[in-house]
Image 1 (cartoon, rainbow over the protein chains, first blue to last red):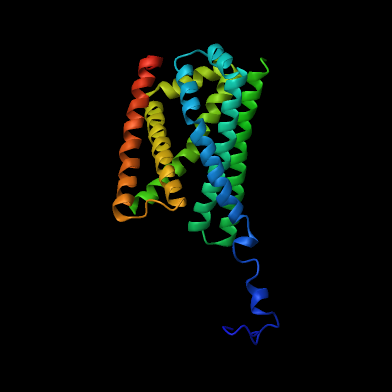
Image 2: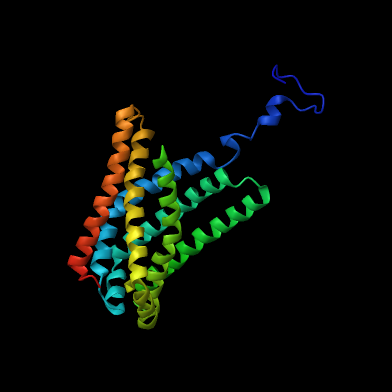
Length: 135
Length: 111
């Protein structure tokens, strides 16, 4: 096998057997990239988001809703929610792939991770949109 | 070396902590009743403890993440640099957490 000749059990070449098993066969490279893009995004958003949270401390529901519904603040929160849920989805996927080796359990864990991240993102986005529409 | 697992553990904590963020936003969007329930939980000692822990996890993960960016760019691999970055993230995370809570109590009256 080391000389590249086909093994006895298969007529497939060595190249055919390994093709798709590296980073090119998955979304790994794309995940690596977006993990960093979302990280930079959140880094830029950190100070604005902290200021927004500070503004909201101690306010009642009406006051908090009014602030969160302001276009610029809603947009900042929306960007933060999208970046953080995307970032955490990738991070959890890496953790799952590192520690869970049973294929079925891994599949279920990855599905659950996707659903969780999407649910958090959509719930937060829905709330921000609702507050922005002034209902 | 042990610090890379802390980056991962704080990441996991933040992962589940986003439920609080979503709950908070949904509570504000839902109305005074839902917001009162959320505020009641967050205002309790266990709620404050969780948010305090969340603040530290966020600050540490952020600084520790910057450390990873430095490494991504090919710097900071020397033994002393590596140690320095790690301690900066550790101490910086604690300092920023305390600073934010002092500011929170100053501005929000600790409510």
